[in-house]
Length: 193
Image 1 (cartoon, rainbow, N blue to C red):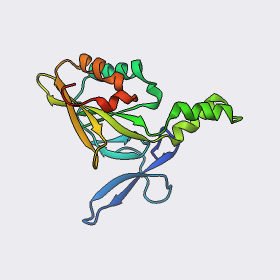
Image 2: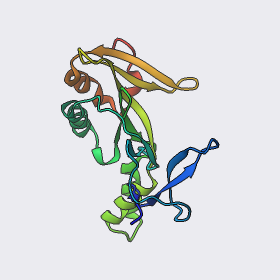
Image 3: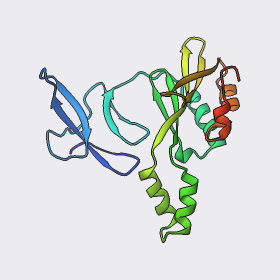
Image 4: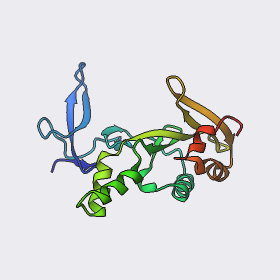
């Protein structure tokens, strides 16, 4: 049986094998059913779905963050914003928080007023159309001491990450800074705040 992955939007992706220019095997997901399809994930690889629903096969990454650290971040987000429309991604030594580019609550409200769809159908549609952008990230700067650098995305110029603070107390970082996610006060966060 061919290996498939259905992303958060409900799209089905098929695992393919192709060849590089040098003739080495390469693996990728596509929504197309034609070509050389695989039945299982090759050794040393894992399925990765990015916050916007694109599906990739990548080399398996070692686990850098503990389940407890990820739970602290998830609980901090849950406390301040709707976790359903917020994505967390772990890339390398970073935990990245993605927020929707659209005003999901306003779209829900308008759709409920001007639609014959049920709230469940509206939520399903929102999952399909919502796109996400990175807003904040926690960089693990010292694996031994578990020191984190908290950064927020800065929209000035071409955009870049701005370090706000560094701490070994992940819980206090989350408590102090996550309350600004998806609020105007986010733009007032400056280094040393």
